[in-house]
Image 1 (cartoon, rainbow, N blue to C red):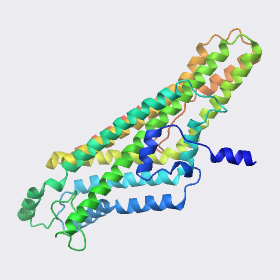
Image 2: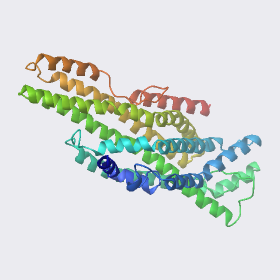
Image 3: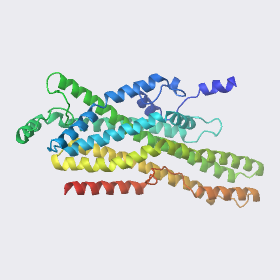
Image 4: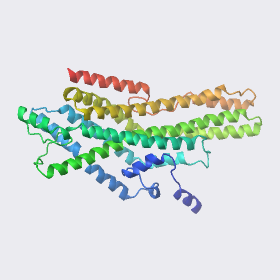
Length: 390
């Protein structure tokens, strides 16, 4: 018993090192010595970061309400772009934190090879996507810089001109249009408010963007396991010794069952994430592109583009999981198992029957994450943009 406890305590996550390091930096993944049981400090730290980052969401929401109440309707499309994107980001991140035990269990499965063996290309994929993760981080930072430079921070002159022409009282020089029940338009309150805004926007969008990437990276590790299963089945069928062939086949079946068992965990972890992604992305893209068409707001356009790329990454990952899981059956079917004993042939038939049902990432109630759902969201975004333009 003590041996088992010691073994559990020493479990280590070796997959996705760069992505998890970034998540730890942003406070959304526990330290290595706390992965099995994150302490209160981890959740309190995240709660404080989330609270501090909410200033833009609060300011845009109150501005939206005030603009509607005063019948000015000033830049509502921009308010909605920020409100929807930040609300979706908070929802996905908070759900990820709430499911941390499932997250850790999944990553530990990718990192352990004692029982099921180590896939041949694990190290190569782990290293390659560790490098790609750095590139993706640089991509996110460049997007964030463009979003900040294209926001209202540098449109003070235009903002003051609008105030004079329309008789408005907008606070100029902030990231987004903001209204507060008290005056913030004086030094140094406005400057402090802006700094907190910039921190919050950077934090929440970077974590959300990194979340889309870590889903793609998770998919790659599942694909590594799926290809390993196909390889094991192929090697088992090639074995000439009946006893050895049976042992290898049983080992391949155990690997296959383990991979199939990931579907429930993945959907438990990501189905709400994907549901939120699908629902919100169509609105964000519609309002964001409309804000650009109306006022040439670069910030909203880049934000829409980022959500578009994130949705494509997740949809493409879901499609690849389906295709690769079906390919296991194809590999087994094409193998030469005419020399196998009768009982093994029956077992092969059972495996082939199961392989006809692919692994799927669900986005209930919309269906599965694949190329079809991606096209559906793009069409919905275009419909919203057409309605707004009219």
